[in-house]
Image (cartoon, one colour):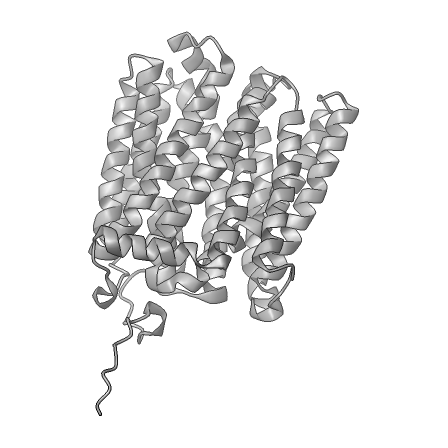
Length: 423
């Protein structure tokens, strides 16, 4: 009797590598990092413009200005669930270029906004466009690398991504010095055009046509269902979302903490913001160098444990000084926490995607949507709780860090640091 053998769908990791005709390693990392950096620039260089926007549109409650960050992240989060399936079917290049066109439209609408509501709508469109870079940067890296090599590349791209906040507020301040907050959006347009040209000229299609998936609701749901059934993917994505909430809570309230609401730094606000971001960039560089030797689990688990501990210290200091600690002390503790979070986030991202190479685009899309919406929601709660003190940020860091640690322990079934050198 002849037994029919059902063919097994190909797994992208198992294919013979195709000759690479694209940019070298350094240029590849730079392009991918810039794709991710569009998001950070679109948020951070707008922060110094909050007072000017408040005056232009007569915004009565300063906390409402934080919506310029959070509605952007809502558009950014929901759009991610679309880009992955489309790129798995049509390829990475055309989808990325289309997303940049949407981003440009959002910039243009923001520049001519006649009301605060219009500006918020334009920010949503910007977020929808920027989401393509977030999804496809991860998918492109996953197309070419796996395991610790992927973690190393992601750490390098994250380092560039995290250096951006060091200079983005200063760029925003320079644009304001030209006379209007509208010039901040001009700088975003320039970035988008530069990235479009560089990507179009230098980055080939990374998705092998043999591994494209049909663009259909059934195929997309099948990939999402596979992702949801993967404990490691769901667990580390949840932990990443909670840690993202810490970042979003801090970014959303940073302008009020450092400038108008608490420390009143004025033109020195970009400097304080950049110092904290510099700690993240330094840690990400260290992570990229040591992750191959120590493993993703060892670094990320140590990072989240230490982050939670420092978060508790931050709460204690905040309470001791009635919510207004000396600036140098507050910056030191905040920088320490940003340093530690950078050992967790890139590795959480890589660990979540590691078992999903065959559906990298859709998996990256869905997990990006999930982590962004979770992070934006948690960050919104922290930001809207701003009361003229550092306590909302401190409690947010400690609480979300502890939750992330619990989730990681659940993901690894209580065996932290499991995998050692192999993982």
